[in-house]
Figure 1 (spheres, rainbow, N blue to C red):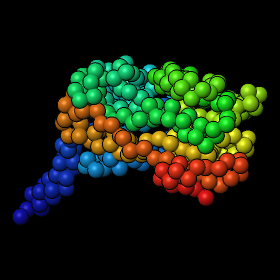
Figure 2: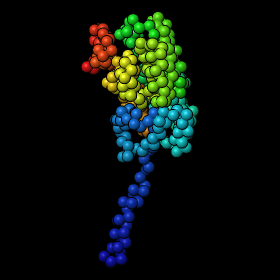
Figure 3: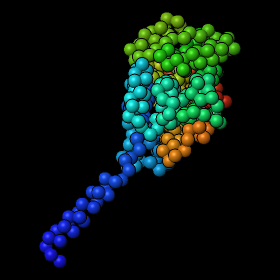
Figure 4: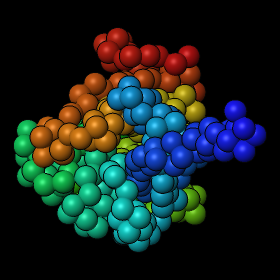
Length: 326
């Protein structure tokens, strides 16, 4: 073989992998939008990525993810959702209720998988759970629906307390209005005086606990939503510092000293959201995927906190708990 021919052949051989690489299709891009922060929602994000992996997609290997975190500033969500639409992502994973509402308002064509703590039909995300229609489907947990149950549990361990408080976030309208309405109805049924206290920033917390003392509230129910979820451990510690019997959604709250936690397994909701996102990347349509409902509810009691507060937890109640923290 002549030297010139050999060099030409060698050049073609070396160039071939680069040509083939250039012809490989680009990785699909998922837009992930959340009302909270990456730090505050690290366990949920890990669960989402796990579900995406179950569907066959691994970030950086065969899918790219564009993250948009509002860091508790819900007014940023419309612009963040619009940016994902502008980037023409393949699917939007809209986790937290307010993020889902912002994504729905931003596009009617890009598929959206939502994760919500409220009723998606009542919120206007879908027309039906079984037949979502349009470009949205997703996963709903029962955490807004079970908030009145948290008041009932608190009343069960504090039967002589007549004044209770509800902590809610008015900047989370999809959850705020339903939570206040339903917990007020539960309070009337139980014959309790209920005060609704609002917080939408960390700076509100100290004032909230000072107000609880002024009201002589004997118990606190913490409503749902991404903002409070981001500070679940801090809220648990605050209830210890102020000796306030309280109940919230997450086990981490009880582990940090909160009296009780009662709510859906939110990590499983995020995992299922990841699975649905992967299925849509494979070509399935949101309209053909029924909204999934995460029905598992977990109940935790911090017995150490109960003893410190002088509260005797009824045996039947502790027997119903998934875990008693001592």
